[in-house]
Length: 147
Image (cartoon, rainbow, N blue to C red; front, side, top):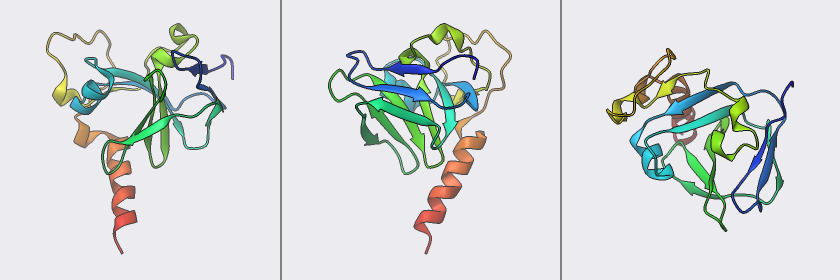
């Protein structure tokens, strides 16, 4: 890996590192991310499960839907990680060197995009229900609950 991917929370009680390059770096505009992170969107980098390791401390998790949970520092409250069953995503702002990681994936949850939050790139844009990762996470969640 050419650039180390290291990061953590505001109070430094939680630290993480990636073991490989991210699958993609995307921006989510969905209403749930807006509420969870107090912003118009959330930029995150995604890894297949098992490729992100916490090296110090661990987040507290909130199950935000049937298919997703969100991890944050229980001391300072910094949002750190978003999980689907097969995916871990950390937020760009938690990285030690966020400037090294520009979005290269897509814009998600575009149905909730705030009109004045102008997109200045040509990345694909998906409604939540059309997002391939969301579709796969929903499929896996249904498999778990179907006898």
